[in-house]
Figure 1 (cartoon, protein in one colour):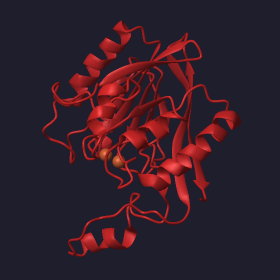
Figure 2 (cartoon, protein in one colour):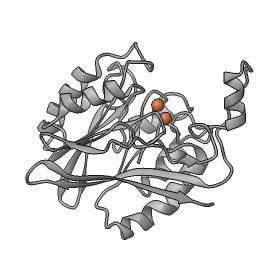
Figure 3 (spheres, rainbow, N blue to C red):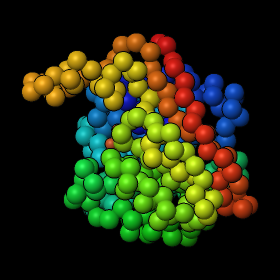
Figure 4 (tube, rainbow, N blue to C red):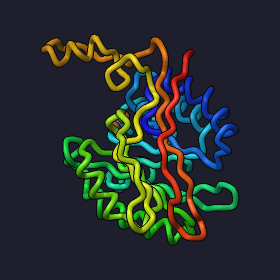
Length: 257
Ligand SMILES: [Fe+2]
Ligand SMILES: [Fe+2]
């Protein structure tokens, strides 16, 4: 699942994920939780714990540290990673593993530098390090959340990691892209998975106020909370023995509260 936005996104995840686990016979579910706080920016103890009651593992992004309570959650919870290319003294970890169906799944998260965060170190070098650390931890599979604005940077990360990661999945723009494919080397790739958040919105936030920002009005931007929720994810079929992706396809749903 791409970025889960605000309370509406969390509610949709809590209801839909258990149903999809049955319907699609899922072994594991991973979600990006950087917008899961009630205000749509960051992660809290409550939003992270709620999501982890239905998913196996969480990734984050540029909003990692935006909400109160993130620090304790990131230090305590082993099933969450924040961008590996943040400085080492910041709270949390850049890579981690979990078990699903007898398989050790390694996950890392890197943050793009184009139009997002020019202060972080290279996501390419951070991904290299994370992949080798995950292999040392015994990961059978390596999945990468490429959290970035520019599709070019995400495609470059995909090719950089082709054959070493089994999936490089883009997040952050909140809009799903139509380029799901399997790169040579057996790496599943998509430029953006898309968000889980209110459909009638601008990337999950109040559309009228967001529009106002572009028209020169300076106001606080609230998360959208009304109407149907778009649930965006991709379904992966991974060949553990062959260490390659066999299938990637979008799994999109609309959820009505
Ligand atoms: Fe986001
Ligand atoms: Fe983001």
